[in-house]
Image (cartoon, rainbow, N blue to C red; front, side):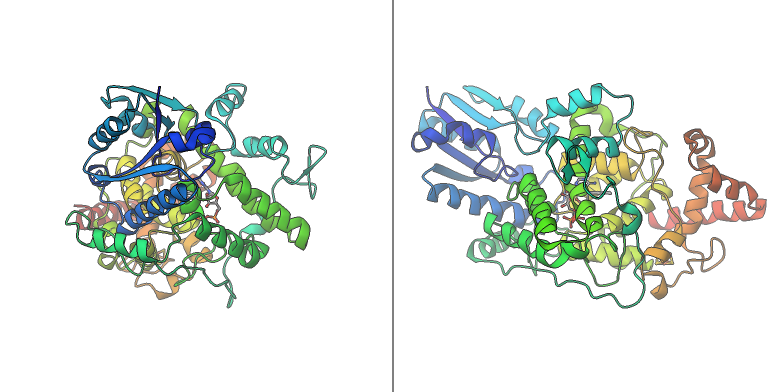
Length: 503
Ligand code: FAD
Ligand code: SF4
């Protein structure tokens, strides 16, 4: 019986479960990696996402070959044709695949007609397996990130001593929400020059008629394990020591501030979560770093990333269709073209996404997602946009982050209240409002900031539902104190704005 391994595009590390299971027989085990053009056309993906994934796949194929694996690299319209040819040529009886992390891809595999057995083996991309998360979740009434994160710290022995948190507290968030006041000295971002492989992918993608979104050049992402390790080292040295305080800040022209830029590599498998966490922990002990920065970063990877993946596999398949607020609006047109909006915050962040396929967490949550939420865009439409526009986007991470965290469409499985805010928050945490044609203080009138009238319109439209959450009574009190004429004008501004921007 001959086994062949299909390595999927986001499973690019030597230790992934399918390769691991045949490591002792690698010279007799054919491996295939497939670029499918039909699959790449499922969404209007950012051109840099296509370059990143295909170049990383080609680099990984070369790395596998150099260590003795027998690799077929196939460029094909669809997966099935490539697989059938490979199976025939290599007389394969069993196709072994590490289970995809994205649920729709499992469905795609289940629908393949290959004429031989398909063996899906458990995915080892995360610290918590799907089964372990389910056991944890089934034993609890609430699925709070904070509880999960503490359990993870103990389970993997990270920043703990005798089961107690180092520094006496699990969470130092209070110190990590500073607004960007004064001139901040931000770390330099480490980018890469495209090599020969990447340049040829860029040229191939330029020649494809069906790609349209995002600037393809300059392309500066890393594409290999060695690039990813360099980025991690750079982050640990230059950004981690001061990662914490300005985690939520946004500054014009600064794409990442102290953020790590490692999500594309973690999600492709070019970095493993445990090596990232251990590198941060080691730097804390060796260099005596501030705990609020190191703990704040470790919580992102050991807490949020694992939690989002756990939730994605825990909830039912129809979670992605959730729509607690019953929002059915269209996406504002300018999400696809930043030059079409004069709202400075959205213009800056959308323009950055067009250029890089990246925005940091608060830009995603409090600018892009927040605005879609208060406007009343359908959660599925904004989720679909996020999946196409970001280089680190995959189903497992987008569904909980956008449907759950960003849009509160699950009614509170993942969070306890919606991340909805007016321009006040943006003015406090960014420098965007200073250069805007709108006035962040106005909610009505000619210069009223759309974040303001939509925020109050959102509260007004969903008063009853929001009241039931019990956590936003303070702002509902404000809403009830607005004069009838003010509310009427807010409603009219919202209707008018949607008519002009969401067709
Ligand atoms: P850092 O701030 O340096 O954080 C370190 C790492 O922690 C990240 O690389 C990431 O792996 C992990 N992390 C932190 N928060 C989360 C989270 N909420 N969910 C999962 N991992 C997390 N992350 C993606 O990887 N892909 C996405 O497509 C994605 N879409 C998002 C959409 C929305 C609306 C929101 C609110 C968040 C989204 N996130 C996504 C989570 C988070 O914003 C990104 O992981 C992070 O901004 C990536 O940048 P970084 O590597 O510089 O992160
Ligand atoms: Fe954004 Fe409003 Fe501030 Fe302009 S004033 S940058 S639209 S929040």
